[in-house]
Structure formats: structure tokens, C-alpha cells
View: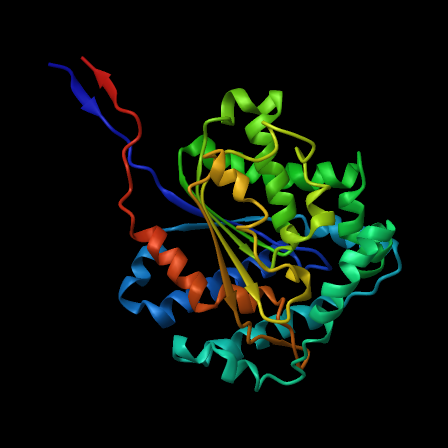
Length: 328
């Protein structure tokens, strides 16, 4: 009788960062991995070994976005940025209980204000109606504005960086969690759509799946942004079809995700059965950057108890065998 040969899938967590200036890849990867691990260690110390078995990977394109911003005359101090990220993480690591990530603690963060999100709720729809979205995005974020330009060379370069890392994990047969921050969620969405529908990728990756996609402070609920996503023009190729579970975290006062729910915007993915669940969570981001509340801070999202729970819930699922190979 033929013997059965099986392969157990490894687990990988791929992180995609967002817009604005970024420090070198190693520095950003280190603070990201440290924040993710610190959250798990705080809330699930007995299961930290599960996180330590996960390969934390990074899709980095900060050098590309830095070049775009520098060309626009924006200034950046790498050493101050790295130090401030480390200080933000140190402050958040000192919070010893998950229950202390609520509204009472958020109200005590220095400089907390709802004004940016309030303005975004009013200005973003107005700019959309007046055809001024591009001007608004260009003023706030020249690198993201460049990404949204049709046929942008920068956009394809950024997508290629993310796509290369994601496809490498798929080629290895890994079980994958994808964690994307801010506008990195838009880039990841486009890459997932490409792998699902574009001819040069679909034969090899069309049936590949992401176990879990975690979006953090994502602007995907904004109607003007959704109109610029790949595949937005019509059925049946409107949506990616390679995500099993989608978890979306939106922090109070985070203007980047001023439309803070995605389940309503992407409900057709459920109707078409191309995703199992789209779950929204309203959270409080306790991070302070440069002495002032920053509810969009990636460090504040990564260390949040909800992210830790999603990671552990995923890591606890037993590794599965790949399709069996029979040998004589």
C-alpha cells in the first residue's frame, strides 16, 4: 500500500507599513515586531511560544516613499523618528493590563483631540463632490497621492515590493496573516486583487488564500478611495477572492479611517462568498508621538489587545497538512 508523505505548513505574518517618511527597513521591522510581541506577551504570556513560532516578515517600500516626499521638499530626521517610535513603544509596554486600553486611559493621553477626524468626516465627502479629493490628498500625503495617480510608476513599484513578499510566502506554502497599516491597506488590497484577477498572476496564485487580513487605520471605507482601487469598475472581478477572514481596526479620532467600518462597504464580498467574514472593531490607540496623542500610530495599533487576540486566535489553529503526496 502506498505510503503517505505530508508537509506541515509554517505560519507567517506579513506586515505592510503605511504612508509618510519611514526609517530604514531594519529599524522599522524591529519596532514593529517588538510591538506585536509585547502585546501578545502582555495578554497571553502562556502562549507566547505560539507567536515566537510565527515568522514575522516585512514588505518595505519606505525608501520609495521617502524619495517622493523629499522631492516635494518635505524634511525628515531619521534619528529623531526612530527614537520617538522607541519611546512610544516603551510607554505602551509599561501598560500591564489589556483592560487599560479603554476610553478612560485614552482621555488621559496628552493632546488628545477629535478635531482631525471631525474635519475629515466633513471635508472628505465635500471634496469628493467637488472633485477636489486629489488636491486634498496631495496636500496631506504627497506619496499616497502619487500612488493614486493612474498609471503611476511609483504605484507599480510599491505594489511589486508587497507582491514579491506575499508571493514568496505563498510559494513556500505558508499559512499567512497579513497586517496592513493605514494606506498600506490600499496597496495590499490592490495586490490581492492583482493576484486574484490579473492574467499574469492568476494561474499560479488565483487559488491561494490568506488566512487572515488585519487592516489598521485603513482608509478603505472612504468612497473616493474605493473608486481608485483596482477592479472597482464592475462585476464579477470587483473584489479580491483570496482572503478568508478580514478584521478591521479603527481607532477613535484616527482621521485616516474617518469612515471606520468596512463590513458595510464590502458586504458584496460576503454575498459573492469570496470572503468568510469582515469584522469591524472600534478601538482606542494610546500612542503619543512627539509628546502628543497620535491615534493613527502604527505602534499603538500593533500593541493593542485586539490585535494580540486576533494573532493568538490565528496562531492557535493547528497547522494543516498540504495535499498528500503518495509514493510507492
